[in-house]
Amino acid sequence: MAVTLVSTGVQFPDASVQTTAAPSTIGVGQTWQNVVTSRAAGTTYTNSTGKTIQVGIRSQGGNAVLRVNGVIAAQSGVNDAGNFIGALVPPGNTYQLQAGAPKPDWGELR
Image (cartoon, rainbow, N blue to C red; front, side, top):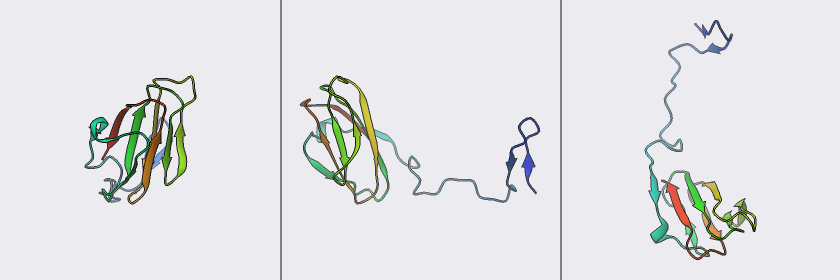
């Protein structure tokens, strides 16, 4: 039996339908980690966690490019110093930051 919200008319499935997130869902069992001391621009890293991770970077020098498997996943402009860029990195994929700044702020949800 479906449940309908009277005010919106939105229907939800029967309560017997499982609504919990699967263990492989991003964010489940993961935490944000400050990895700035173990990451450097120009170095290629591989996501070996077995789960998709989120990479978040604040470049201090503008014109930062984040590549996943060699493909541009995020980019800030030349005048965007201090802007945040980020991308999802599936398991087994590589990721690399190309940036003019020597040491960006770097966090990963892993």
